[in-house]
Length: 76
Image 1 (cartoon, rainbow, N blue to C red):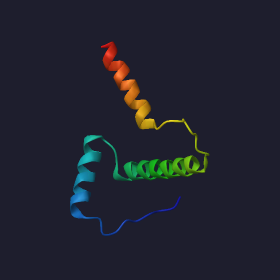
Image 2 (cartoon, rainbow, N blue to C red; image 1 turned 120 degrees about the horizontal axis):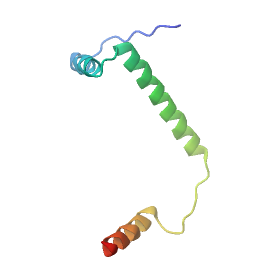
Image 3 (cartoon, rainbow, N blue to C red; image 1 turned 135 degrees about the horizontal axis):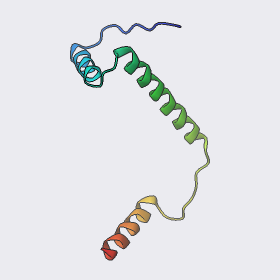
Image 4 (cartoon, rainbow, N blue to C red; image 1 turned 180 degrees about the horizontal axis):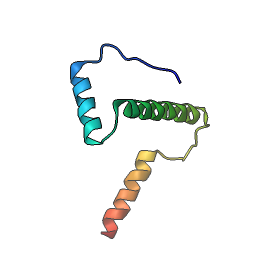
């Protein structure tokens, strides 16, 4: 396994990180590995999404959402 070393972590961020992992009974290493994996997966998802062709709904998503809200409010 490889190692990663992070230098020059701002003190405030380090304190917040230490507090978070303590409260959640985890290690900084475990938290960092999960955060890196999550961010890489999120980035890969964005890249796949960007490659997909766009779908033309004929109207804007905002107007569709507004219509749904109006129908919901009328039913309430």
